[in-house]
Amino acid sequence: MEKKELIQKALEAQKKAYVPYSNFRVGAALLTEDGEIFTGCNIEIASYSPTICAERTAIFKAVSEGHKKIKAIAIVGDSDFTYPCGVCRQVIREFGKDATIIIANSEEEYKEYKIDDLLPHSFGPEDLK
Image (cartoon, rainbow, N blue to C red; front, side):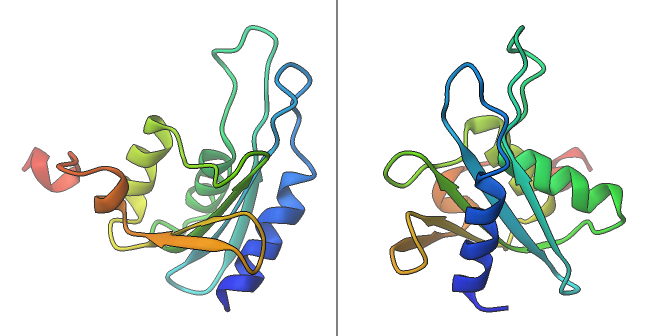
């Protein structure tokens, strides 16, 4: 899958966000190692703590369907280059240590990172051995 196609899927997912409190929409689309695509949007809850980010929605959907390796994830938000929160960075690290992370404003305007760029000196499964 082409990066622009993954960004387009994230933009489509962003439209489905449930954000009655912040009105800040985020969409994510991930590509698994075996070629499957999963999307997610942020979902806010009135008491806030159960709120979930778009990135984790997409990742948890993939994992719940048996796909545990992320090849790439595209993220779009309502502000200029919306980056994943710290919790999402840790979850991306768990399932996509070598994944390409695409932070996009549009199909034409995006930046690419690896998790080590966004979460240096991270802690992962191999540290528990």
